[in-house]
Length: 427
Ligand code: EPZ
Image (tube, rainbow, N blue to C red; front, side):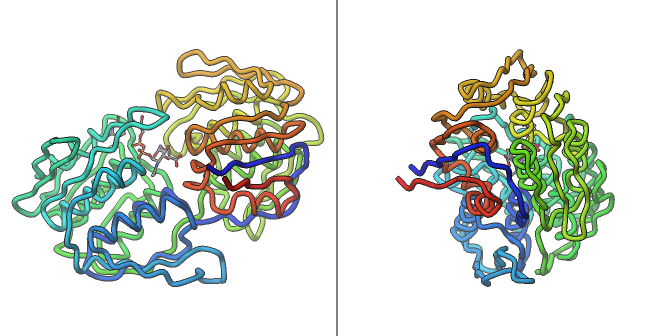
């Protein structure tokens, strides 16, 4: 298993290109199942999860062609997907277990083919992550759902019918699955308390480009009027606000100055707000967003994760690294997942002073972190260890970096280009 070695204490200076959003690309790829036309997606990031989704769709029978670099020469990958000849409506366990987002094929398959057999995604490091809201919503649209042998068996004897679905709490995946199903359902579907994440809005805009009628994009109430069929479309994936936020914190914890090229300020407002309160300058530029660390230490700031437009849970581990060496203390509260503090013991091994009490962690800033050999447990915990290594004195060795490859494109390259002493050790 590959490892990453970092010699810390070097400020990041320069610019970092922000890739297309993983969490937009995955549902967008699943949306190709809704039509027999060709859906061409640009600005897709080079990530393991994208490859996994492509493999899943290919085993359904989706024809997938890679069209080289993206428009404007960026490193994004352009994929054309055509689900004209879908042979199987089964998403097998050995693929779903590797990537929970596989469950996003469920809605499209049931809506277009009237059946789907999708392995129940198990839990993962950050929580049990059930899909009950996905299933209840599909049932309201007229599907029959059975669970058998660890699989979801969904059937619709006739075309799905629109319904009013009220989510008891915000779910990104359930909003996406049901919005896709509703796009082919008969009549009108209203999704109340829908997720407002930019990746959800990106999917909605793509569905509109494919011929769907959707109102309320970007709000917590989506109205979808289903059509008999959807067409193909050309669509470019929104920039990855979590990747951008991650590199903004990397800049802050190394005392550097970096321009994040390709991201829009509106995508990272909540993160920018916390960084500014902590004393970091975050300003819009013509090409993206410039982040500049203060001369001295950052200030401790309390953070609570919330659904968009609140502070993203996918940035919680990263901002904790910033607070670990800030002046004063910070209370970090995780409200979305029940077990998303696995990075804490590893950060404490690097000299941080963090105490977890249920869903909150009190972080008391220390003067500096010290390099150590650490282990990654999930995608965002892994990247928080990279940030800690960049900030720490001495050398940090991070094991199990396959987590990183799922969500960060060319991480070492992008950081090394800004002066970081970081290398991957194959093994
Ligand atoms: C998406 O996961 C993202 N993944 C996650 O990013 C992100 O952390 C999460 O949204 C929250 O923003 C992708 O988009 C591929 P949820 P998702 O449904 O859709 C509970 C990353 O690091 N819930 O909004 O699975 C659930 O357990 C990943 O890129 C139910 O109880 O998240 C969680 O506690 C990690 N029943 C909460 O709701 C359901 O049916 C929010 O989950 C669905 C969800």
